[in-house]
Each structure stands twice: as C-alpha cells, then as structure tokens.
Length: 129
Image: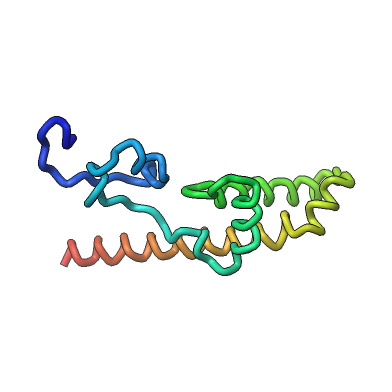
C-alpha cells in the first residue's frame, strides 16, 4: 500500500500475526493495526511449552499454541474414547506435553473468546443506543 502511495490506515485480522509480516513489510508495517486475542505465549501457564518450542528452534506465534492444544485435546479424547495408547504417548504425558499444557491453552482460548464476545456485545449496545 505504501509503495502505491496510499495513505490509508492498514487494519487486518489475525492473518498478519507473525514476525514474517514485519520482515516482509519492513518500515511500511509501522502503525499497522490488527486484531487478535491475548498472546498465549504471555500466559504464565504456557511458560513450559513455550520454552520447549523455543528450545526446538521454533517460535510459537499466532495460532501455534491454540493448534497445539487442540491436537492434544483430540489425542487425549481419542485415547479415552477409543482406548488407543502407546509408550510414546505415556512418555509425552509424563513430560507434560499433554493434559497440563493443553488445559492452560484451552483456558486461554476460552478467556480470549469470552473477552472478544463481550467486547463485541458492548460495541453493539453502544451503537444501538
């Protein structure tokens, strides 16, 4: 937009929540606004799993932690529902990669969703008044 001479404020959704956006846009990214729930990396309950990702050389930005939690919930659910189990799953569970980490991310997701829903409801009520 800046290269085309446009002066409009750039506002985007969660699709630009990554370091890649800033690295591509460079100085043109200054002043960009975006919408996204609270960053789950900042939740103290997420510290252990964030460290594991970073130790593995991966920055868990944007929806990484939400996606990770969803897969873990499906894995725990599948094991409980269908009874599949393996030594690898037990090792992962003991290492804290399943239930405890997933609960923190699920809690964060629910909180963020409720916060966004309440904000939208307040805005709609204000607009209707």
